[in-house]
Length: 350
Ligand code: TRP
Image (cartoon, rainbow, N blue to C red):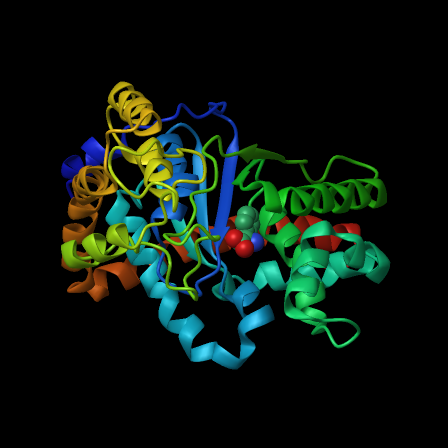
């Protein structure tokens, strides 16, 4: 399948740190909703830029999604295909990047069970990401055990692919630290370097805010989906938070915290012109309406090819299912081999 017509949008801006040819990249997404422009700016674009530079796997983490969404299991199952569609629509090439589904890889679950013996509840409760999520959801002792232990499952994901590089956002760094602790415990038990440590590859793009200035989230409806129609783009751009003090075009306006400029910074192909627009906006003399029309055009250029490709792929679900199935078969072989090594460390037969 030709990928050429999405290439104009895949210009890797800003430049991502490169990887070595023998690195192994693993990232994952919870299939809890359609991916949006925040994902695109923050991580999808860098996965495209890294594609082909070394081995790369994208894991659709449905089991991890169930740790906090078990009441919406059907929703998670449906979104496994939606996330795969999003990957393919942005230009992920299944010949270069393996797309696999977590729940189809039994070796990852077995690795999780073995690693659980190397981790204390106290350590899990100290994990800053788990701690923040517990507070957010109001969990104390009533936390589902699977939720508390999801960092261990994530360590299984990472080590199961012998990943050396994990491109993630800041909030996932504690997961990498906990993974490397488990790696060191396994290697100590083994008396040899059975598993490799990994490093986080932090995205250089600041987090893209939602249209209302809050954190972009599927459930808040404040994010722009990758498959957005022109009408949706217009509606969401019009709803964008700018500067409440900027009433008339002639008033000086604020650029900091201005959601329109955050999007222009992330997507406008002409940064010099954006700098000039910022200058005019701050000085007074540039209205929100003109600015929003520009952004609408910029986002249309980014989304239109993704939307077209997504629609075409959505009509060919059989192809998408084949991609997932073949990726998972490849991943099965990789993760089985790692499990064999780790079983040996625990004196289990191969
Ligand atoms: N925890 C990640 C998230 O919430 C998803 C994820 C699952 C992941 N397994 C992973 C990320 C392995 C990196 C590596 O987005």
